[in-house]
Amino acid sequence: MRARLSDIAQQADVSEATVSRVLNDRPGVAPETRQAVLTALDVLGYERPARLRKRSAGLVGLVTPELENPIFPAFAQVIESTLAQSGFTPVLCTQTPGGVTEDEYVEMLLDRQVSGIVFVSGLHADTAANHDRYRSLISRPLPVVMINGYVPGIAAPFVSCDDREATELAVAHLVALGHRRIGLITGPDRFVPVQRRVAGYRAAMQRHTGLAEAELAELAELTLFGVEGGEAAASRLLDRGVTGIVSGSDLMALGAIRAARQRGLSVPGDLSVVGYDDSPLMAFTDPPLTTMRQPVAAMAVAAVRALVDEINGHAAPHSEYLFRPELVVRGSTAVARSAASTAGATGEPGTAGTGPGKRQRPAPPALPVPA
Image 1 (cartoon, one colour):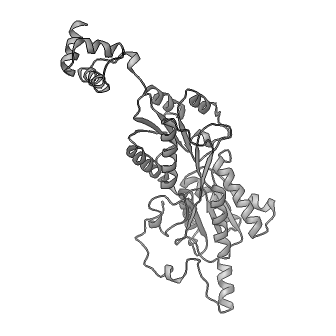
Image 2 (cartoon, helix red, strand yellow):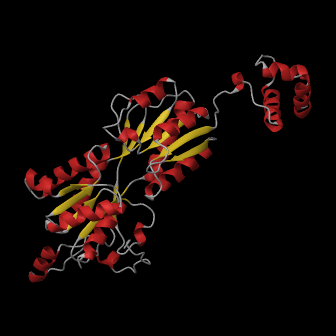
Image 3 (cartoon, rainbow, N blue to C red):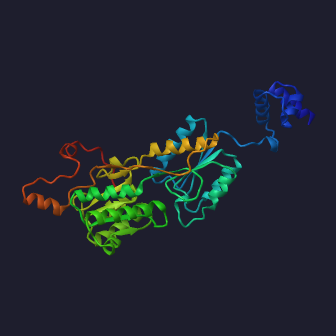
């Protein structure tokens, strides 16, 4: 031990007595001197004593469900950048099917003594999950913030896009284009965002079309998130005669477009499709996708600011912050054929909702929808 003290003292350029005081966590050592000794420990490969392994002020966990959907890398990029600007280093934890679970990632993050965790579309969005896991974290105490999902009674800030309003706006857009048989495809109904989208769809359809509840139930398809789920659900809705589809994600919308093309139908000529997220590259698909844009940057910055406030002891309000979506009209929606025929018979031009000026602009280079 004497030799080790000497090595550490020499590396840190302090006395052995100072090293001893730091290792025993005793007062009377300047902060910069204490840090020099701890750095010397790390450089020489010595393990820090347990009493000196305090929670890092610089690490923040970021738990996302996966990175295949482009919206999650978009969230991660803004969150990581905003954390870095606040002096924190993010630790990205990405889940994959059959891989590390959210709870296992949390245990790893706790071992690294993170200062807080941001959950994006995690188990807090799943009504079938046990949410005591979050209460346990908060009671440690460990600051947490949750994005897109809400659990009543959890003392933490929640940040969400207004899913109900997003679906209502999408339905209203298609109704304005003359569509009446409008279908909804989205994920399993145990998820909070899905429940809100379904509620918004039913409210908007009853308000704009007057369809009965039983008929609306046949036009709503709950399936797996992703291109494959969207394709299968859209195929069933096409059998029921829909002319417009509102999707729970951009990837599901691309699946709906693929289902239409496999039947020889054109988009938007025979079927109008609205996505959700406005994830990167959606402006460059074929056709460019009309979608409901999540304000990713604003949501991510708000989540980080709330977490940093919690870490610094300035408790953020423990409630849900709802951010308004934005309808982005592109080339995957157009006037319904029946409405266009009626307009032609009366001598009135059919419009596609975006205005002649926008329709006449050169389209960006198109990326093919997955085959």
